Length: 430
Ligand SMILES: Nc1ncnc2c1ncn2[C@@H]1O[C@H](COP(=O)(O)OP(=O)(O)OP(=O)(O)O)[C@@H](O)[C@H]1O
Ligand SMILES: [Mg+2]
Image (tube, rainbow, N blue to C red):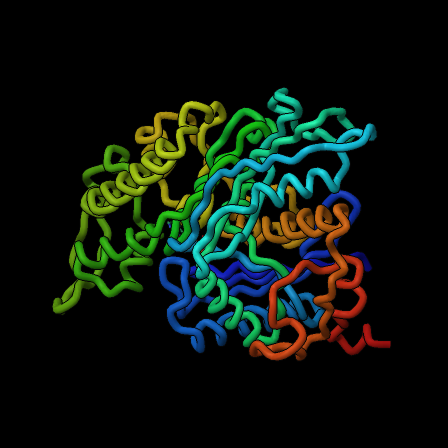
């Protein structure tokens, strides 16, 4: 049995818990638990009790599916409270051994020293590139000689209260939050090719309540953002426009929806029962598309505004990659390409084995990405020797904010697999 990793994607539409076994060159998914989400709006918690119950249900399903008890997990985060910026850090290098890991750490600490209001915290700090004695564009300066090391880092920050509320729900379900990971970084990890990341690409994860963006250039993250518009808004427009209950509008969108009116045959009709009417009525698919298209165009206009604001719009040679549940709406690719004026493709998670039939859909990009990126981040921490500061907990301790796992912290990957999970299945207990 290999090492295990767990990811919980707490979305506005669904909560997805995955249990993965780490193998030589991939992560093999051995457990899956999906539960419709409640208690979240636009990526932030608005009902702790409701969300805790849903998270708990998704976790139990994944436990039954994998045969393991889940004690800790990587957890996705999005929402309008997310902010990002770039920052520079500078340090002097001494000695003749060249740049050491400790020097990189000091440079990152210096970049991290940004003025943050007391109610915000750093979620990620990602090195973009280094400059050594004025020579810029260095990817890894380790071992190189010089006196002055500069790092340019991308820093993602979040509202502490939003993270605390989410943490409360996960811990209320008896699971310790190992690390929060920004949605589009997780998705990017499993939908992009290495060539795209090098050339410059925009990941657009369109979920239910949010659209999450990440710009990758030169193989690393240059910009991230979250827009509080997603598939929920499209469904809501349909509910309002056709006078339908939300659930019916959702079914109509998935069955007959299209984002591009020019693709629809005017003779194409379907039948629904609007509010206040005794009989079913006929609706032209073109009329449905005419409701959907403006909202989708507006969404991509917001995306365009965000990347123009970031000033990286001219650097995205590989274009945009759409993922997330709403990327499955027919016509999205065309509208995205028209508005963004760049090549667009729709992607589902790759780099995955196990349960592929269920997981190879755009809705699962974040969930699958959490396993991979969580593992990479932990390994990176371990490499830098920052791990092993505790955080080891058997399920049950520290839930509801009590001792043990009450605080998010860096954890020792090696210890994690020693004690946090145990087999639930009777045949495996002996
Ligand atoms: N076949 C489909 N056609 C159109 N839309 C779809 C389809 N399948 C799912 N969706 C939409 O995808 C959205 C859910 O996507 P996803 O599962 O990625 O959301 P989420 O991760 O729960 O939400 P978020 O990331 O915004 O918090 C819903 O709005 C749903 O209507
Ligand atoms: Mg999502």
